[in-house]
Length: 197
Image 1 (tube, rainbow, N blue to C red):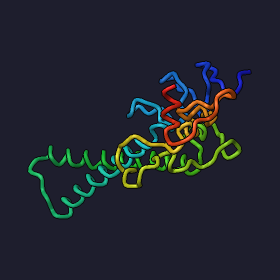
Image 2: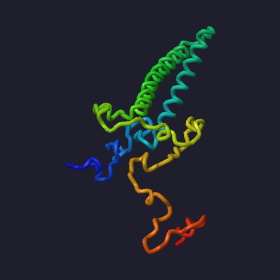
Image 3: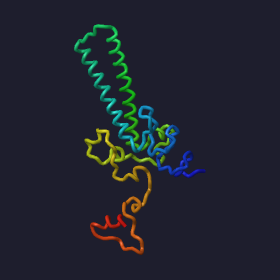
Image 4: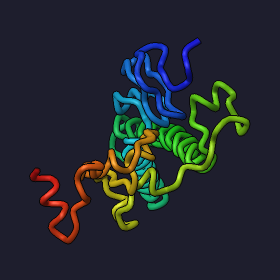
């Protein structure tokens, strides 16, 4: 058989807790599902954006319902049956949207708290697997918490760990490791001198 670290479909390295998406035709780290709304897979690198999309949609649905209910309780009357029908349709759409999106938000929070994504839950790979809660900084980044509510790119403390790559620290650092023949540079300008050479 094929080892767990190699994808059987794209023959590439497959990080732990990743899945191959047949629509995107690539492996997605911490894949939750393929979202037709975003036309992309929801995984480690865009889960924050998906959760913000759900949060913004919940806020808009609640706002819409509040306006309709406020108009109704104030006795606002509409002069045509078409307007009344449109308000009734908007009310029904807002309720349906709120219920669906709130369920999706619950699924995302559940996936973060338990570490079990939608695909793994559907395949019944429960707590027996290699699952651990996902740290909030792995979803929202290391920015201050008010930035969590803005659709900014996520800044990870350790990008390679979040993406599932086990890379030696010298491979990540911008300076190459010193060889046996060459002494390690010293001082504050050592990094600049090493990168020029």
